[in-house]
Length: 323
Image (cartoon, rainbow, N blue to C red; front, side, top):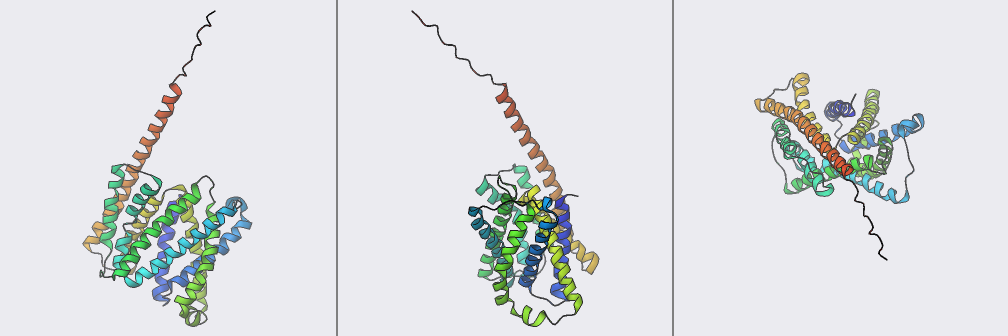
């Protein structure tokens, strides 16, 4: 099965579990849950390093790479912290609406930083994908000026994080997904500990140590699913593009609406139905146009190679020496 498909279904599952932890179990500690994710990913990926070394595919990390990898881990943590801060100063509906524009952020930043330009038809497909996902977001729109700034910076950092991850997994001196996950989760857990202790002290003083056994088992299982989600995300990022990952995130958004209707019996508005159809239809349209673009690009590159091979080298004949 395609890694993107695996990541998509795991993303829906983990998102649903997050809602269960935050509401049913009364565990409003998102940073602490993220810390559990980081520790779990570090432990499980470390186990795979020794149990499945061929799949882990580790390589030696050079000295000049270590600082860059630390900075990348900081980027991941900053993205998490900004995401939590933006929720505090912005309504959930506004946060979701702005994050629906992530495909556009990615397309623009990839062009500005990497020079990756797609066809106009491909860019046009992002309109229904973004617009449809916005339509399914419901709730009161409110925010402070500081919250809006933090939300926009968070979107920018999240986009950079996705692009950097792709470069680390597919550049010339690339890392394997599991090795990158081990490094990021280990450093990330170390960096998150003081933040969690400061921002969510009640998690350690009131929540942990006062729960029935099934809650701890659920947290352990949640950590394992987060590890599986991270592996599939890195594998999908390696085999696709950051733009595809963002588009899949928008499709997940509308699928969560459908799940809420089917499972939790929430009412479905007409605008939500139209939004779901637009996003899903736009995703299929993107797939078609991207396939055409990649095919045309490949044909153009192939024709250039054939033109070069057909050119005959000019032979400079030396004039006979006159006596």
